[in-house]
Image (cartoon, rainbow, N blue to C red; front, side, top):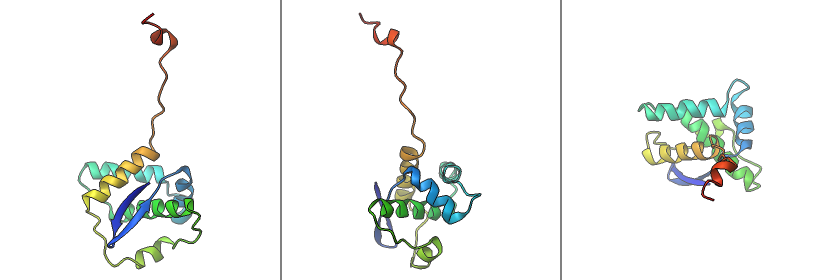
Length: 123
């Protein structure tokens, strides 16, 4: 779990496989969290910020964090956005935390075991 600061409040973020379901349910069948996360990260790397996409991903991760705490009521994206007074979408710290969470939880590499012949080569 990561914590970011939005609208002068600390917001817990968590990404799990369930985040994929929440994202598609909220934003439509043609929206995919993995694809949008890749677009977001590539944009960050190129110095381009898609503010609405960033906020959609943050919303999804914030809702996932609450759901995992058994908080069943969380505002829909539009209601959540209307409740914000201000957002600094260019906040580097928030972008780094979101990128880390995406990389850690959505794009994990499986560790491959070395073949037995390489493990025993020291004998």
